[in-house]
Image (cartoon, rainbow, N blue to C red; front, side):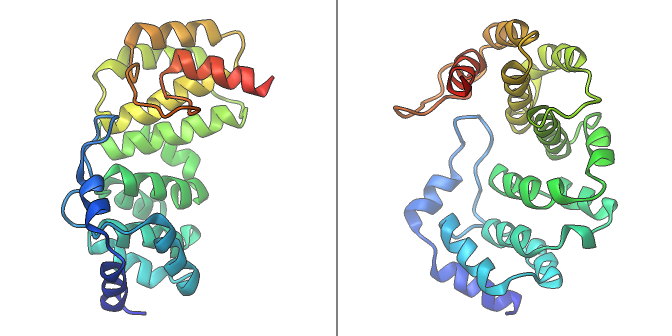
Length: 227
């Protein structure tokens, strides 16, 4: 398929109601998808990816369109190992919205051979998308019980930086705080105290039965669930 054909198919699957929903500012405070999107359901994007399979060259061309669904599709058909670390860095910094960032971080960045070096670089970066990716990788490491992380130092950073961080960064930084609270019993009390002090996502509109991202509530719920 060509870029033109893919965009035409995505446009045909678009839904105006979903487009309007995607354009709204999310409850996390991050900006919505904007106007360069069709409002396509994620399941439909995955169906197209399944038909195309892997096509790295097409993926890079789709990314350059700046269209939200085209970029999400690109993350599914891209070959992470075919990218240099500089190319991954460029893709990350050119992210258009949180919807795209989630897919890029999960399906490309997390699969890249140089992700550890990129994480260390991004954790010091002021770019919102690079920092978001760095904290995303850090949260994943905590969840996997990976060694080498100074968790008390991470809590120091989170306590200091989270309140003033950009919404896009707050999300994955909060995920790291949550992961520490769940995985490390010795640091759990402090992680919860930081969450209470900052109060981020305290008023999150969670549906019945869902766990909100507010750390004091989420940590307790997840620890209880794990038994």
